[in-house]
Length: 180
Image (cartoon, rainbow, N blue to C red; front, top):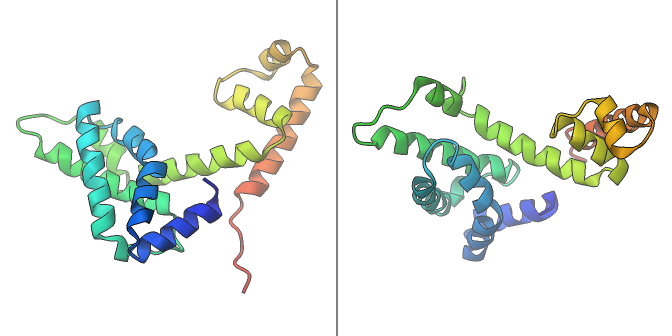
């Protein structure tokens, strides 16, 4: 879903449209479920997911459509995951797991997830040749030499595609100034 459609869905949600909640669940549910599974078991994640979207609906009037809908929903998911972990009977939650979940200000992981979504969307806008070398380098952890061999292209071509791809990616990820 593109950012304009996500924004429109957020406005409808903030205005109390039930269809927007259903759409939000359909669009963001898999992301939230993936996020929750980092902290609780898969069956627990399903329960927490339901609580997250109940809370999204209950507090939809608190959502500011000028802010990231994904970030807001993931923030709620983070809080519900923490609540769930705290409420576990006689269980010990590793301190490192709680640190990772809460971060310094409690929003770090949710912000990283929202940023990752933005990066994935921006990658989809790159020319296929540039996207391919960046995916191989940063997601599959290939070296430039390995990419050159894998794609059967000169090393200089790999370096050029990576450089141009990173420049375009940076431009796509720059915050946009509001035109007023």
